[in-house]
Structure formats: C-alpha cells, structure tokens
Image (tube, rainbow over all chains, first blue to last red; front, side, top):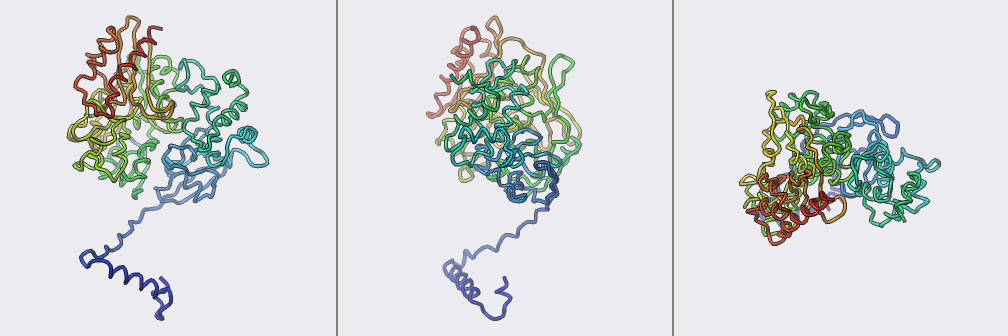
Length: 217
Length: 316
C-alpha cells in the first residue's frame, strides 16, 4: 500500500504493477476479474472465562472456536489441532471438569466457564499423576495427540468414578469398573497415529489404582 | 466458516422468535454437528441463537410414571441417569453406542434428534446433493452407497438418519415437545418427527421455522429385556451399518426398530408382531419394498442376523 502512495516508482511497485498487467493481458476481456468481494465486517464479541484458574477476557470474532481462542489468542499451545472436526480428540480440554472437543465449540459459548487445558493439569516440576504415568509407561511417540489423550484420560477415570455407563458394560444399571476394556472403549475419541494405545491404557490403569490388572491377563 | 451474529437466549419463546424472525438463523445447543457442518460450509447460518441458558437440562418424572427429558440434557447425562439405566436400558445402550465420550458430553437430546445425515455426498460441497442443494441431483445414487439407506428412500435422496438415540426412542414411543414463536406448544410422536425424503430431502423433520424442542417425554416403563445391537465397521466411534433397538418380553413378544437403514428410525409395528416367529419373519415384513443398491444390499441379511442375535440373547 505504501508503494502506491509514493509518487516515485519503487522497485516493488514496478514488480506488482508488471504482474498485474500480465494477468490482465492473459484474461479475455469478457471475463474481466471480479472486483474483490467487500469483506462483511463481523461484529466482535466479548467473552470471559477462566482458563487453568486464571480469569481471561477476550474480544473475538464469534466464529472463533474454543480451541483457536486457547491457541491463537491465549497462546496456550499445549492443546492441539488435529482434524478440527471432533474426530481425533487432539483438542480435548476439560470444561468444569468434563472433557469436550474444543474444536467443536465456539469460544463465545463458554462465557463464565472454567476451562482446564494440559497446561493447567500439571507443570514440568509438578506433573499430574496421569502425566507422570504417561511418561513412565511410554504412552506416546511423537506426542502430538498426548495433551488430548491425557485430558481425556483424566476425565475418563472421573466418569468411571461417577458411574457414567459405557458400551462395553455388561449391565448398564450397575457400576462400571476401571478395566482395560473400559479404558479402550472410553478412549475411542482420541486417535494416536503412532499407536501408543496399549501403553496409554497401562498408564491409565496405574492411575486408576491397578484396577485394570485382572482384565489384562 | 461464513460470518454470523450470535446471541444467547434467556427465554424459549424469545429464542423461537429470534430464529423465526431472522432468515438464515439457527438454534445452537451443543453445536457438535452444526459447527462441524459450518466449518465446511454445508451449513451457513447468518445468526445463531444459543439456547444453553433456557434451563431445559433436567429429567423429571411425569404424572403417568414416565420421564420428561429436557431438550438440553446431554447425551452423557441422559445415558447415566439412574432411572434411564434401570427402566429404559435400551436408551442408555443406544446412546453409549454412539459418537465418542467427548461428543456425548456436549451433544444435547434435541440436537441428537436434529443431527444431519453423514452421507459423504452431503458433506462434499463439490458433489451434487438434493439435501444440501435442492435440485442439484443425487451423486449417492449410482455412487458409493455402502453406508446409505435401503428403505424409505427416494429418487431424490438415499441418505440415512445417522443417530442411535432416536432408534431407542422410537421403540419407547417417545414424544417430542416444542414451542414456537407465538408461544404455541405441540407434541410430536417420534414416529412422525423425521420425514421420509420424497421430493424434499432438504427437510429432515416436520419442525417449522423457529419451532424449538423443549423436551422429549417417555411413557411409563415397558419392562422386558432391553437391547441395542449395533453393527459397524469399527468397534467404537463409528456409524451403524445396521442397528437393532429392541425390548423383548418374557413371552417372546416385543418391539423392534432398526437404525442405519432409512431416513428415520425404522419401526414397522406389523413386523414386530411377528417376533415370536423369529428374526426372518420380522425383517421380511419390516423391509418389504426395500430398494437397496448393490453396495448396500448386504444390510438386509445383516438386519436379520442382528435381530436373530438379539432374540437368541433374550432367550439366554
């Protein structure tokens, strides 16, 4: 833009001018390039929520997903974007302790919510027991899916504790057990391209208190 | 994603009015299906009315001994409700057979009923699809149709309703309660809720513009043994090729609905009356007039076998 305002022709002005001329010359007159569509201004919206215990206020395009708000606006890049369609689980975070796909939720829908990301579960000096168990059991290779796996794993153990039923439960009226089969079923929304699944289940079993041992034999 | 404006409603009639009075407006609850479709611009709402604050998030007993499930009760909370697990186990089983833990935590009861087909041609904006773009044709007919419908479909569309929860609700004779912009309430039996595609596959349900689901009611418990048998390509987190929701009574009579085969949960009362005669008798009647493609004709014997497995299990 500065070039166009400059009355003396700059090198960049010549180059862009030249390129534009070439494009026009190659286009039949009938199909003259359409004028650029005027960008419709989207009214920005304020949103306030807590992330890892800290109150955060943002002003966002309403299209911003919770995932993008965390990564691009709050620079909490621990939470990962994989498929961006709720199929891979890399974006899993906890909202009021419940796991969700942050890619399939708008940030403005989370006014007043308490969000926990991988950064809020533990720190390098003080790992969450699930983080420590993933390290111990080698629950990853490349690590890209790991933050989502760990957030999901923490929530799964809580869901089992609260009696949330699963597809592999023989009697849905009874209480679920923290068995290997249960871990595998409940973690199906988290994909690991490196295939660390068996070690992830081991890590979860350890945190669950060895309850999965009987099932592993 | 196309630009939209957003508001959070605090009153159901005001929410209905906001959608009815704004062309291109949509309700948003959990958002798990709508946002997925907005990202690929299959859905392009100009305005979103967020209904999460309307308070429809409880499950209550009805006077006649049934349950009234608030429209915003999450799939997880519905499946985990003690009364549902005990008295309507087919519903718990269907819900936990669908989606992933993360999605069930966000997806709402009403949103689950309103989820759109997962036909690959509906999702691919480069392809013809009468459901996505009325009049553009159907690339699924003659295309890749392994997952698609075998009955109740039309020359315009062969998509299926993809959900599991609604198949169980069909067996339970659930009723969908709504309110519109004028404050008018109505009750829609689930049997009448999802439309067959006919010439207008762009209309999934009988809801009118701005009509808001407030609750789903279940009649008093049926007793019997409850089953949800889902056959799919993966053991978890996959859509049904065929599913069977069934409540079987000790005398061998019962109710049966099929998922993954039609534009709506597929229940034929005259067919389920044949349950004591075995699975083949039921499916022969239930799928009378089926028009499978060569890719999905396997669904017919698969439905028989899935039901046979349920009947065998019911006999212990």
